[in-house]
Length: 217
Image (cartoon, rainbow, N blue to C red; front, side, top):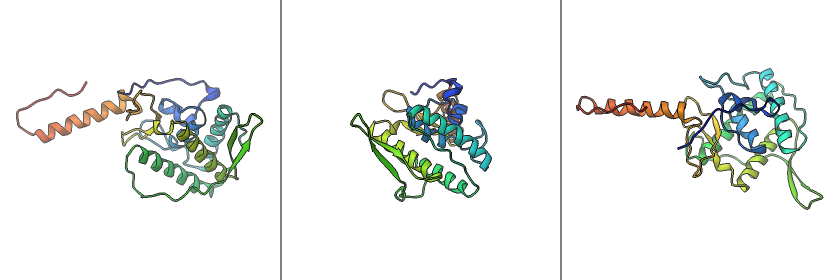
């Protein structure tokens, strides 16, 4: 069973969207993907951080600053226009679909087209080749997100980035359970809600058979 606890993150290194959910953060640059996913509005955790260009700009500026501190790479100053909003929201939906497919949570839409984004391969003085985001505007952001996804897959971390199975939540969380079996971002809230819902459904189906079960605690 996944054991999650709410964590207070230092403000200097806080992923704004993920922090409001109290989720375990994905390590290093993968947190940028998690952060984008957690911008979506939920009943419990707040409004859509991509609702308006101003909201999105504030979120993006903060997120790129945190990403830069985690990765040690410089982040460009991206200024969003109203025409960028559709691309940004589409990018979020795309990553939701990809994450859900990895966790076998069908969202619909079928196969995705190739991610047509530029990246730079930069050889370092230490002999290592690094993948660095490239492009302008939201294409740079897409490049950074896909690069982090690929790096996470190579490091064996990608399958641990998940969406909460509570359909009213869908928070993106990093599963730290030993066998990677977590399905709720918080067992005490979303997990308990699902168990109670399942209990009520079983009780409804049982009807008046005379069998009674105690609700899950």
